[in-house]
Every structure is written in structure tokens, then in C-alpha cells.
Length: 281
Image: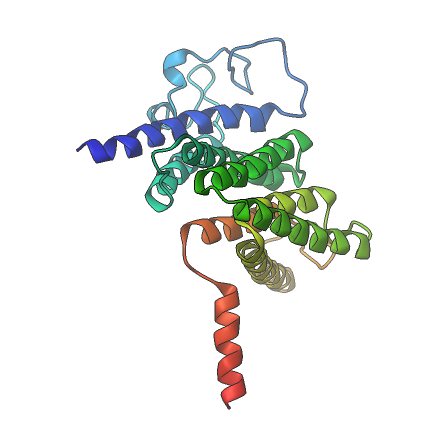
């Protein structure tokens, strides 16, 4: 029974962190009233403490403000549940050893995942990546390999992190300048560097490969769907998507990171296996 306590604690912690991130995501970059307490975005009514319980309050209120009945954003439970799931999955996949340095590396991982979720949601909402969010991501990405190096009494994880950060940031920086900022923003460059710092060289490259593959498939699919709907006039309100349409990249990079952290899927190993089959023919 005691072995379930860390999962229970991390689940609750994830819900609490997710609730805090929702406030940060929704308020950052926009002028707010002087109200310090949480309030309804529609009517401005202060939200009571019993209506701020993560997920549960949203379900009991049926996704509506108690005061005015306006619809609450579904982002609230999604972010809270996502953080809870990621925190629990982190303990299940990469539990820390009973040492201060190992626990520090684990906490840094949780901080990285929190910042990544915040960046992902903000990028989806606004196709922007705020620098304060990126700073938090970079700090967590630097601390994780530092703590890990002390934990294993070897500088190897730190050196691998430096190589990964330089490689991924350098590659996206070339894309940024090559496309004059139209194909890749500087925010994406910083985030890719943070991913390389956390995952190291080879796993970082694999995360980026997965992000590009998944993003390309999604982009082509949406562009095809847009063309079909436009030709047959099935949905006039559906926005037209072309090669010039700006789509957020951070969500796909986040998927690549999560696959790299929590699974054994290896695009490089798959490529090596595929090339071996081709050469044998």
C-alpha cells in the first residue's frame, strides 16, 4: 500500500501545479484588473475557494460559472489532468534513487514538464512562446543533467546535455536564418536547445525527428482537409490552410519529448534497421 503513496502525492501535486499554470497561461501578456483572487473572465465575479478545486469543481459546475452561467474554458481540466498524469508517469518510468542529487534531477524533470505544458498550451492559443516560460524551461533543462552528473559521480550526462543542446538549437537556428524567421521562430530555437539539454544528443535528435514527422503529417492532413472542404463547400467557416499558414510547432516538439522520455521508441534505431534491410537487397 505504501508504494502507492508517491503516485497519490504526485497526482495531487500535478493537479495543483496544473491549476496554477492555468492562471498563468490565461493571464500572461494581457491587462488584468487589480483583483488578486481568481475571478470569472466574463462577469468579473470573484470565484470562491470551493469552486477552485482542480477538475472536481469544473465537473460539479458542469463547466459553467456559478454566478453568470457563462462557459468556462475546457483548458482548466485538461491542463490539470495532463500535469497529474505526467507527474505520475514520471515516477513510474524514471523514479529517483534515494539520494539528494537524484531527487533534484527528478524535481527538475517535473519542472521541465510543467514549463513544457505551459508553452504548448500558450502556443496553441496564441502561436507565441513567452520568454519567461522559456527561461523556466531552460533552467530546469540545465539543472537536470547537473544533478544527474552529481548523482552518478560522472560529468558524462552534463557533457551529453551540452552536445544535445548545441546540436538541436544549432539546427533550428540554421532553419530560422535560412527561412528568414518564417519557417522557424527564435522561441522554437530556445525550446529545442532546452530539449537537447534535457535529453542529450541522440535522444534529443530522436525527439526532434519525431516532432518534425508528426508535425508534417498533421500539417499535410489539415491542408488536405481544408482543400476538400473548400472545394465541396462543406464547411465555409473552416479556415483555409496553405503552405503559408502559421501553425504552432511546440505541441509537436512536446509530443516528441514525451515519447523520448516515457517510451523506448527510437527513430534512429528504426532508420538503421530499415537501411540494413535496403542494403541487404
